[in-house]
Length: 250
Image (cartoon, rainbow, N blue to C red):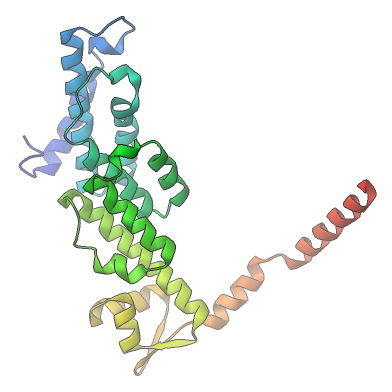
């Protein structure tokens, strides 16, 4: 009830107590076929974990979200819970988890999770949404992601979508720094889809200098840093060593 009324702090304080009560459920003990009582306990436990997962997303607590989704996924994917009817929140939460992985730039983990979702579920609106965003990422269509930041299938997606937009803007910024010495303020405003004040703050965060109508990137510093970060002498010596060893083998 506290969660439904958006009383997030109260809901968050109640969750640990509910999880402690879950440890008393009989279905956690080894047994044979589930009884009606154990089924009801399974449903209650699943509902508690679903609420915990959605709550952590709303509170932007990424660590808690990861813990909760890890505890919840067996209820969706394990044969031990095959006796339960499908949860109405299943698609929402699985899609939300995919969006989280995209927002954290965990592309490999995204594809791993996607493989675990049955093919017939992939056309669901909640699952299609992060899949479409991932396609935009792979294409480099970053502006499409920023443009669609308000087009979410559920309000619970908003925080992760906001985080994804930050990730995308950082990617655009990194590419721009490598490709250009500077950008005009007008170009940057359109490219990043910022309001003027937001652009000023972003420039300050990245250490860019606004010179009149131009944004000047710190390319010299970056190039020096790149040079320092690549141990060229060691790489060359190691490559020559490998070549000599290979010659001996042949």
